[in-house]
Each structure stands twice: as structure tokens, then as C-alpha cells.
Length: 201
Image (tube, rainbow, N blue to C red; front, side, top):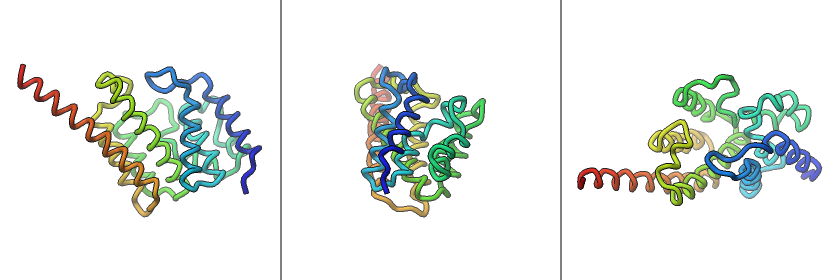
């Protein structure tokens, strides 16, 4: 059953939590990412709980001072809160260093249930598509937005493909695999070009 009022409430809640955020290194409202992830979840067969969780998937990680797991459960039910927790690589403050945090997340998501994996994968697909788009337009300075370099980012995204594929098969994984491969090709081409430029210098 699809209840429009629940989706409207989720969108209003997401806007309240994230209205002052922008995508890294851009002026793009963060809400656009949340809406895109929710749309991907719906396009790939997700149910309303999963679409709502997609709208709120960064709330506990990015804005714990604005909403709690208990409040999410109260507003949208246990399953939505469970999926949002599954999408969060860390809800502790301060966050651990990048690599151990990502390794711990990979180990956890490997064993997550399919309802979580669909939302996680939709998030990764949209983020990686944005990386490819911005890398083509901005070039190497794009990586300065992040806490890890381009090779670490490629390692992490490729590892996500493997972890999410563990015990789960879904068409959205093909989309994720394709865009990660596209990013890897761009990074390899850029690295090769830089090496050739140094050799010619």
C-alpha cells in the first residue's frame, strides 16, 4: 500500500533536517541527492518504506542533533529506522579515520538484509554518477573535496560492489558496477596521462 501522506511527511522531514546543506564542493541543495536516491529506489522496485528511508538515509549520520533513531521510529516505523541505520557508516562523534571506518562499514553491509542493500546501492549509484560527471567537468581538483584520494575512493566503491553483491542479486547492482567501472577508467586514464607528462618533462 502506498500512502502519499507518509511520503509528504518524509520529504518535509528531510527538508527540515538538511535544508541548509549543500553537496560537497557545489551549491547544489543536498535535498536533490535525497530525492534522487528515493526515486532510484522506486524505479528499481523498492517499496514505500525503502523510498522514505532513502529520503532520510543520511539523517542519523549527518544530523543526529536534529533527529534520533527513536524519533524516526515514532514517525515512520521500525523498518524505516532500521534501513536508515544500515545506510549510516558511522553515527559516532568524532568519526574514526576514513579507512578503518569504511572497512568496518563494508563488513557490516555485506551481511545486511536486501531492504537495506537496495537503499545503500541507490545512494552509491547516485553519488558515483555525480563523481563521474564532476570529474569530467572539474578534473583533478574535484578530489580535494573528499577525505580520501581518487585511488582510495575507487577501492572503496569497487569494494562496495563486492560487499553488496554478497548473497544478493538485483538489477541495480549492474548499474552500480557500470558507473564504478566508468569512474575507474577515468582515473586510470588521468593517472597514465600524468605519468606520461612527468616522463616528457
